[in-house]
Image 1: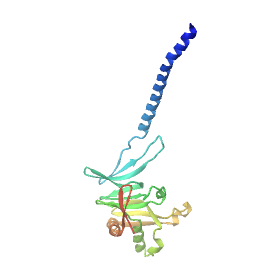
Image 2 (image 1 turned 90 degrees about the horizontal axis):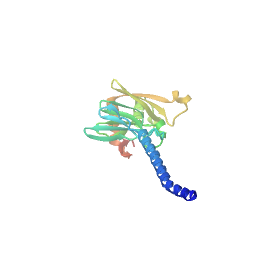
Image 3 (image 1 turned 180 degrees about the horizontal axis):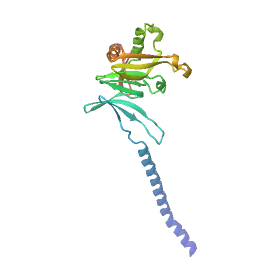
Image 4 (image 1 turned 60 degrees about the vertical axis):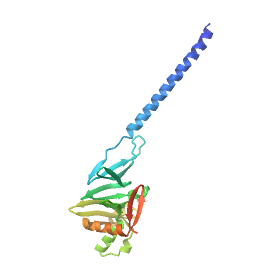
Length: 216
């Protein structure tokens, strides 16, 4: 009698065990999903003034994905992207935004970033060569010897003057840094003049949905 009851009991308990296993799997899956959602939380945008703000895209702390900062601008109820790949600090003054960014998805731009100016309705204008040309004229140096050799970083505005440091490309050894950088200071009106010339004469391109103009 016991031998017939035991298999029957096992048969009856198996579906219950399967249900319990399914419940545990669903519970684990729900926990993982909730964890992923909580770890990929929405980061608050950083307001910079004059409608400009930084937005962190693609960050996920659980997967150790830092994401990348994007520069956006609000114009009334409309929002549009200024630049999709920001490197370093963005500064805004009197409706003019100056920022470092990459022209492709490569990490190389973190060491040798492009330098952009955005004002009025845009688009972004890459001004690195314009600043090198300005520096060469100001210091009475041949532009041909400096052309395409500098990447500009650490922009700042103070008392109507824009200042930035240029480092040689590609990045030099730490021991060589002090002898291979230049400081460029330019009034805001001269910076706009440089950007206007590039805007009129440069090539119009697009990168990840953002339009920009670069010197030919």
